[in-house]
Every structure is written in structure tokens, then in C-alpha cells.
Length: 265
Length: 314
Ligand SMILES: Nc1ncnc2c1ncn2[C@@H]1O[C@H](COP(=O)(O)OP(=O)(O)O)[C@@H](O)[C@H]1O
Ligand SMILES: [Mg+2]
Image 1: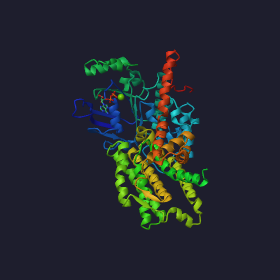
Image 2: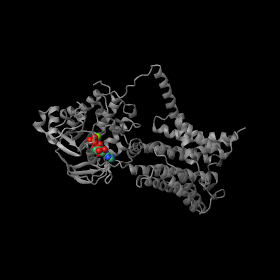
Image 3: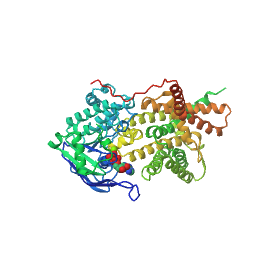
Image 4: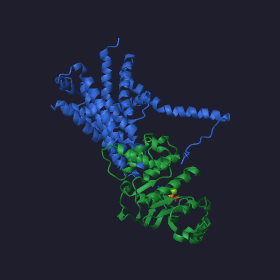
């Protein structure tokens, strides 16, 4: 479903601060794969997701999604196949617009915007049913501006928006990290529910090792722009957070200075 | 005594400038883009219409050409900003400055009188509409029609994407919208309205002048702000109504300021001051609120604000 081949990215090349944020990253995802991505700060996790989403072009390598080479496409050109949720709940929704308008825009992800009515009556019924999945009562607030919602509610809505039109690949970059622990738990549970419901292929960045093992079927660890660990299957099922750290050290043959960041559980 | 005719004149002005205010609303409020092209595209519309009318073109057709060129002017600012990465403010200033030369070229001189030429107003009189209400009728129906079309447009799929571009560019791009194109089209449409307003104003006042665009952005902004203050818009329909009504209120304010003895040349500073006060309102309120908070905190009354709690009722 997703083939990332030899991706390289250097920010500010030629300057002293220029360093390789992605060095030769290759990763294959089968349809239905749910990969959790971990790694210390600055490891290149966000850079990887942004490269896949097309926020910036990569220096080298190819990105193939569902058989289509999207490497040369701009961000908006990749939207037909990619759904995204950001870390900041404000970034995934338009605050001045209503819940139904936000959903309507998401339902047309990657389509040509026409001069047809933005929110049709028949959309509303579908939106209401879909919002009811959240159990937050938002289905009765279709016309409310999104700015009235709490951060958790906005992030839940952002998740619905990213999946209302089934994407070939869902990108989640620490999308629960800005929320309080209870709300984060809710958002992750919702993520799991939506992923299973639609049978989505997912790349989810998290800084929480427990979550990395609890969700998805595969875990990838990044360090200094490289993938240093990739576990799945039975090997992963029996894994604990301690095992995961152990594997990391074994692979690198060194101890990380910032274990604390990795160890946040 | 204030004559009814004078008041009617202020109303007519308010309505004809309302078309310009709707354009300013589209950039400043919807696209969140401070567009200064307006000071050039307003006289552009006037110049083109006046020149065409003087060359014998039908006034209705001449008026219709103005928004087309206004669109090109706005789109130019959009291209400068999105493709050449020039800041929005500077892009508008560059287009506006360039338009000064363009407008002079179009007119061939600094002023074209239209007093003895046919205009859209004489066309209306030709249709049997009494001259005393022709302007009011034309400008009212024009402002209302454009307001309604704009409302409907902003609720289309395209309109939603345009509004989202002004609200949250990252989000709408991730949903597959080319935000560069949105800005270019939005700026184009805005300046089309501004140029149309300029074309009508020229025919209404009986001349096109190279200097008639000076301060137009600020006047449009004042109208939008006044409208927003009076109607606290909670919907698109109310917001555009606010822009129209704000324009009328603004022209009445100008009218009364002149009667109070202000020199016409002093009005721009009064308008600028008005906009400063309106725009700085929130900042001043925040600052004074912060001061109160600090005072309250000093007395140990500060309360921790707990935000962003997802309701847990499932
Ligand atoms: N837009 C950018 N410009 C310059 N450097 C960047 C940019 N984005 C990321 N980097 C750098 O690339 C490296 C990887 O960052 P990132 O992918 O954000 O790490 P993380 O794994 O914490 O998400 C870091 O050294 C970061 O400073
Ligand atoms: Mg990151």
C-alpha cells in the first residue's frame, strides 16, 4: 500500500546547521498496517510524516502510495490519498466555521471545489450519524462554530474529518500529545475505533512507549534520521516497554542520553 | 436645517461605496489578507468606465468592464504574494503604485469629467425612472444583489475553501485545496467589486479623478468595522449586511462631520483614528484585563483556568 524508498532530506543544506533530518529511510506498509513510530526528540519522525504528506519535497527517494508515485506532487495534490491529524487541535479544524462546514470540507478532501452548495441537506443526516460515533453530543450542534469546542472535542472532530472520506494512508503526528492524559486516552481509543471501522493504513507518531505497543500492529523506532528498529508480529506481541528499550540499545550499541524522553509512559 | 436631499445623498453614497466595502470585507475578514490594492483598483474602475464612456461606449457595458480589470489587479497582488513570496502588504502596495501609472495612461490626464456624458444613471432615466430616485434605486439594488450573491458564494464548496484559507491554511491544504489559487481568486473577486464601485462612483459624482482612491482601504475598513460593531455578526449573512450598513453609517458620519465644520481634507485623519480605535479595542481590553488579573493575583484571588476538557459522557 505504501512504499517509501531511500528518502533523504537535509534542511538548510550548505549551512553549518544543515544536517540530515532523514537519511536513507525506507519503509513498506501493507494495506491495513498500523505502524507506531517512536524516537527521541529531533529523530526525524515529524520530518518523515511531513515528507510523506508533501509539506516539502524530499531531496532523494520515492514515495508510492497505493501504486501511485506521489513524490513530485505538492501537498494538496496528495490529499486525495492522505488524511492527517496534527498535534495542535487548532490546526486540524477551522475555528470560525461551523461543525458541519468543517465536515463538508473534509468530505470533499482532494476533490475539485465546485460552486455547488457546500453543505447539502442530505450531508447533514450523514454528518449527524457520523458525529454520534463520538458520543459527545456534537451531532446536535452542527451549526455551532468549532471555536466553541474544547481542545479534545476539536481533536475528535479532526479525527472524524481525516477519515470521513476514507484515506489510503492516515498520518497522525503526536495527535494526543497536547491533551490532558484522560482526554488523550479518549482520543487514542477513538483513533483505534475509526481505524478498525474503516480498515485504515496508518502511521502514528507517539512519544509514549506504552501507546506505541498498545496500538497498531507494528512499531518503528527512529534515531538521527534513520529507522533503527522495526518490530511486528509475534515478536512485538510479547514485548514490554523495557524490552523495547533494550532492543533499541542493542541495535545502536550505545545508550541514549535522553532515555527520559523515550521512557515517558 | 439639514435638507432631505442632502441626507438622501449620504444614503446614496453609503450604498454605492458599500460595494467597495463588500470587497474589503472579502479580503480583510474572509481571507484575512490586508489588501492595499484597493486604493489603486478603485480609481482603475473609475478610469476605465470614464474613458470608455467618453469614447462612446454604452455606460452599462463600460461599467461592466471595470470589475474585469479590477479582478486582474487583485489577482496580480495574489500572484506577487503567493508565487513570488512577497509579503501581502507589500504586494498590495506594489500593485497599487503600479496602478497609479496605469490609471493615468488609461485616462490620458488626471481628471475626466462626465457631467455631459451618458451614464448608467441617465440610462435609468431613459427607462422612465425619475432622476430623483434613480441613483438610490440603482445603488440599493446593486448593493443588495451583490450582498446576496456573495452570501451564497461563501456557502458553496468553493466559498467554504476560500473561508478556510483565511481561517486555517494548514488544514485546508491538507484537505487538498491549493491555497495559492484561493488567495489569487479571492483577491481578484474583492478588487472586482472595488473597481465596480469605483466605476459607479465616477458616474455618480460626474468625474473620474486620479486621486479618488486615496484612503479607500481605510474607508472600506472603517465601514466593515462599524458594521461588525453594530451587528456583532454571527453568520455570513449578518457580516455582509454589516459591511453594507457600516458603509451607510460611515457616509452619514462623514456627512455630519462635514456639517460640524471639519474640512473635507481632515476627514482622512478622523477615519484613520476611528479605525485605530476599533482595531486597538481588543488589545487595550486585554491589557487592562491583564492589569486587573495581576492586581487580583496580588490579593490571592487568581483562579487557575481549566480549559480543553473533553466531555466524558460516553
Ligand atoms: N522546517 C525545518 N527547518 C529546519 N530544520 C528542521 C525543520 N523541521 C525539522 N528540522 C530539523 O530536523 C530534525 C528532525 O526534526 P523532527 O522531524 O521535527 O523531529 P521529531 O522526531 O522530534 O519529530 C531536527 O534536527 C529538526 O531541528
Ligand atoms: Mg515531532
